[in-house]
Image 1 (spheres, one colour):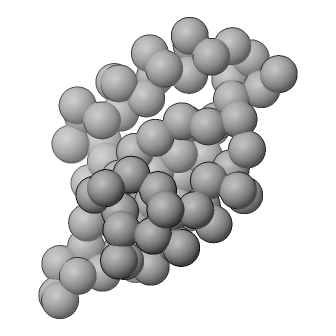
Image 2 (cartoon, helix red, strand yellow; image 1 turned 30 degrees about the vertical axis):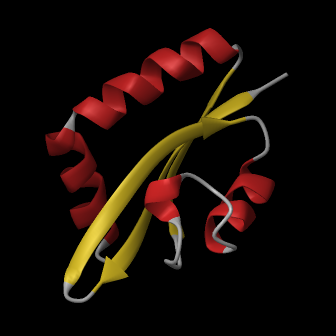
Length: 84
């Protein structure tokens, strides 16, 4: 089974906020976030997928998700490269 680490963004007022997670079904997960059934932080916002990377094991995906969550410099670089 493959797992994905993803970065989604949303506009709130004039700020762009981001959320990082991992999943084995990215389409279903993004749909849940946009329906308000995802993580508590993501409820009530419309999300756009900016970054997606595939991993062969859950443990590798979880490690990389943790690294991306803590690395705000990389998250901001991804957001600025995407020019949202």
